[in-house]
Length: 426
Ligand code: FAD
Ligand code: NDP
Image (cartoon, rainbow, N blue to C red):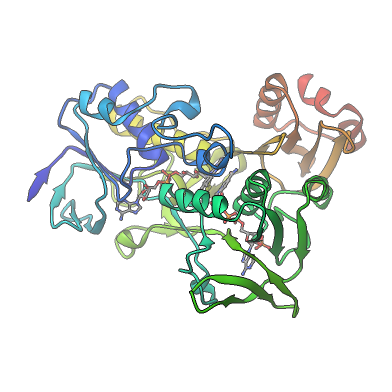
C-alpha cells in the first residue's frame, strides 16, 4: 500500500508523543500527521520503566504513563490520536528510508511518503553479545529499554524474590535497576569497570554517598572489573558470572545496563552525522531540509556552552521534539533552540537533579552525612554546572536560572560556604 502524509514521525517514543501534542497545538489538520512505531503501544514516558513500573507495590502501568504526563501536560491515550486525526501505526518497523524520494518502507511492505520527516528513533540497549559475551538471550538476562523489557524484568524479579541478581554496569540503568531489585527483595551485586558509579557525571565524593547508601540497603559493589563470561546451565539459564579479575559471582538473574546506541542506521549515508547521531541545526533540521531529528539521536548545538551535544535524556527529547514542530509549522517566528542540559534520577528515597556541564573544578557543598548536598562545577572562572541531592523546587529553579547566566566565580570557597544560597542570590 502507498500512503501520503504531510508530516511523518518515525519512532513512537517520548519525542514522538511530545511532537504530536505540539503539532495539535499548532493546528495540524486531520489526516496530515502519521507516527510509525515498532512498539505495540502509543508513546509513553520511558523513564517510568526503571522507576514506578518496577515497584513491588502499586506499580505504574499503562495507560497511566502515556506522554505527556511527565511534563504535567495532557495524557495522550490511543483515543487521543484518533480524536485528533493522527494516524498511529504501531507494531510496525520502518526498514528503509529514502530521503531523496521522501519515502519510508515499512516491514509490512507499505510505502509512506512525507513532505516533512521527524526522525525520533531513540536508542537501543547495548547487548552482551555485542561486547563478545555469550548468553544475551538467556531467559534470566534482562535489559531495559522498552515495555517488553520492563515486563520481562518484572516477571523475572517475581520469580527471583529472595534470590540474587548481578547488575552489570554502574550507570543510570544499573543504579535505578539495582534500587528496584532491592525493593523487590533481591540481593544485588553490581559489577562495573570504573572506580565509582555514574563515572561520567558524579564526582568520586558524590558517588561515595550513593554507594554507601546502596551498601546500607545490602548492595555489594565489585568495581574496577567487568564480566568475562556468563555461566549457563543445561536449561539455558544463567547461574552466575565469571569476572575478568577471576572472581565468580552466583546469580539467579542478571540485569545489563552497559550503555545505549542511537538507532540511526536507516539514515547512514543519507544525512550528516556527528557525536554518533544525526547532526541538526538550531531548528532541529538535518543536512536535508525536509528532515528533522530529535531526542536521543539528535546532535544539536548547545548555545550556552558553544558546542554540539547528543543527550540521551528525557527533557532533551521533549524539548527538541517541540522545537522541531515549531520550526516546521512556524519557520519564520521560531528562534534558535537554546537548551540547558538537565538530567535527574530518583532511587529509593533519594532524588537528584543536575543542570549544565560537569567540567572544570568541582566544589562540594552541604551535608554529605545528611540528606541535602551537592556540587558546583566552575570552568574558566564561570559557574557552569550544579548537582543537587534532596533539593526543593525553589532550589532547582534557582540553579537552572543561575547556570543559564554562568556567573563569574572568583572565590571557590564562597560556593562551598554558601551552597544553594549562592544560586538563590544570583
Ligand atoms: P525513545 O523514547 O527511545 O523512542 C524511540 C522509539 O522509536 C521507540 O518506540 C522505538 O521502538 C522506535 N523505533 C526505533 N527504530 C524504529 C524503526 N526503524 N521503526 C519504527 N520505530 C522505531 N532520562 C531522564 O532524563 N530521566 C530519567 O529518569 C530517565 N529514565 C529512563 C529509564 C529508562 C528505562 C530508559 C531506557 C531511559 C530513561 N531515560 C531517562 C532516557 C529517556 O527515556 C530517553 O532519553 C528518551 O526516551 C528519548 O526519547 P526518544 O523519543 O528520542 O527515544
Ligand atoms: P550508561 O552509559 O549510563 O552507563 C553504562 C555503564 O556501563 C557505565 O557504568 C559503564 O562504565 C558501564 N560499562 C560499559 N561497558 C561495560 C562492560 N563491558 N561491562 C560492565 N560495565 C560496562 O548507560 P545505561 O545502560 O545505564 O543507560 C542506557 C540509556 O538509558 C542511556 O541513554 C541513559 O541516559 C538512559 N537512562 C537515563 C536515565 C536517567 O537519566 N535517569 C535512567 C535510565 C536510563 P563506564 O562509565 O566506566 O564506561
